[in-house]
Image (cartoon, rainbow, N blue to C red; front, side, top):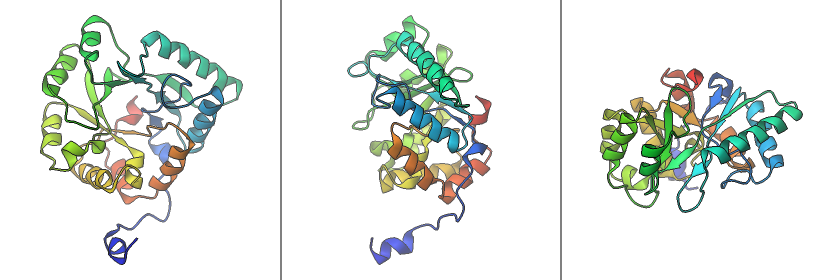
Length: 249
């Protein structure tokens, strides 16, 4: 790191942010063997124990649902949830465990919305992500479809989409105007994804655009990054803002 990087680096907190204030995590990958998160039940229990130690009282885990890769169904997810709950209880873990899903906006999803009731968390919050490579087509129509079917759209980790943040914040503002909720990946504040993602996350915190904070935890490395992010002033600012809805879930 150069002397110039140090000059522009924001100071960190001396004491880590208390994540028990957030209380509920609503984005993670803890059901083993069904996506790119936990591979085994041992992995799941290790991650849940770490979340409990960080102060979380509840984890709403959200396996990927993607037409081309992770063909998870409601039945697969709910069956996996019960297995994780039983294993966690046997291990004496106190953290409450629920499940929803992280839906990928692809050619399959619109049909599913029209034909079946999909997994949500809280009061019909619907977590979805888009491609990291290209801006999605027809996103406005998709958001309208969600809303007219009784879902509240929650865009996962908007700070991770470079085709939006590399230009300006105008597209994010349009999404907010349409009633889309935003979920921040806590590890974006550690710089894990990129400096660009970290900077736009800080800007959106300043604008009060995030309603949810999620770990998006897949493996123990993400736990270590969360501990790093706990020292970021931006995280303290977000939690103190009163904007987060995690505790309502």
